[in-house]
Image (cartoon, rainbow, N blue to C red; front, side, top):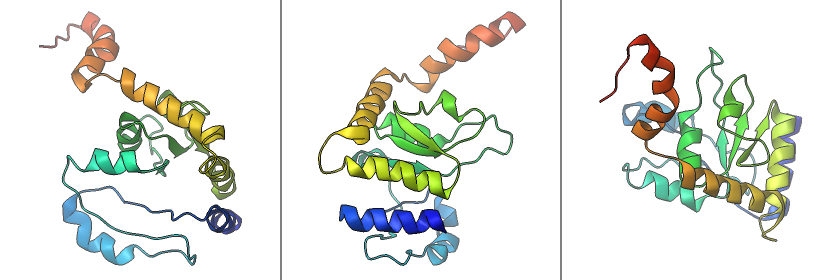
Length: 174
């Protein structure tokens, strides 16, 4: 509760509208539309938009920062939505868990949080740089842009990262 109050206070003081777009499959839309409710704040809006695949990166590039609430049950998988965000050059605030640091480099291309209070603190750091063009947001934008520029295709990354590990076992790739 304390964290949500801080986020509301931060959005009011920043004078910005914070919006969101839930991920997921189009077939899940009817169940999600009814569950999305805007928090009690004049500056927070919840809008659901089901986009064509080519429009999704455009939407991400229009945002200031992305938010990933993904929590791996195994502790071994990475949030694909965060990969999408970074691939579009969008810095990410991500829930912290065992391996997420492989994708989100805290202070470089995003920030990690563990609870509502630390999320509100990280969000505050980012929002403070919104109008001045400096601070944490500028640094994170630069880092996310570098990450996006250096990211290869799935096939290239698989060959670079996974193939050397599985090749000694006889695995081949086209």
